[in-house]
Image (cartoon, rainbow, N blue to C red; front, side, top):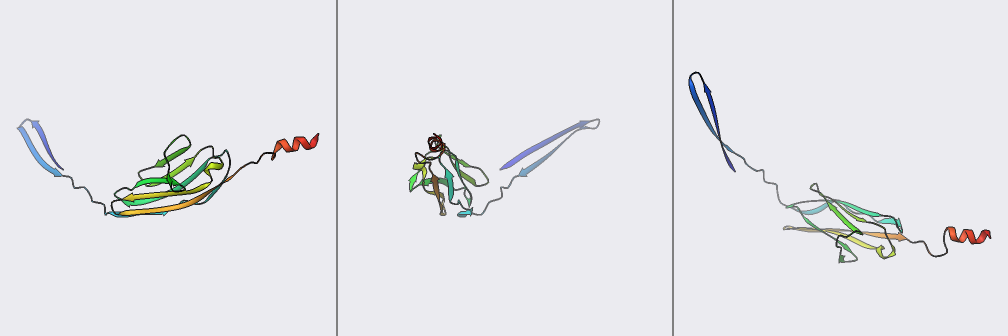
Length: 141
């Protein structure tokens, strides 16, 4: 990009015009195939709580990211939220976890030079019927 600048100064001796051409040179980043500088880890959560997988993705051009649950791509919804910032921090947040969410999760990063994946397991602890406070109340009677 080339910019043209002109400065005009007026005073007792008349006017003075100075001109300059400025050339902005963008620093070219080296192209890098995607890789994970931080990978997702296995999680164990209680049913009804939230689960969060965090990773950090490096690469240029900036990789596109897709999350998978048991090899099926995940669409963002109230239940599945995907965050991906310009620094490469990427998260999958699963709200109100239920037994159906117990699965293998994969983050896949792709750019023109290649792809990288990392995978982790979500283990959901479910409360079975009869467990908990209800059972204690029956024993007291």
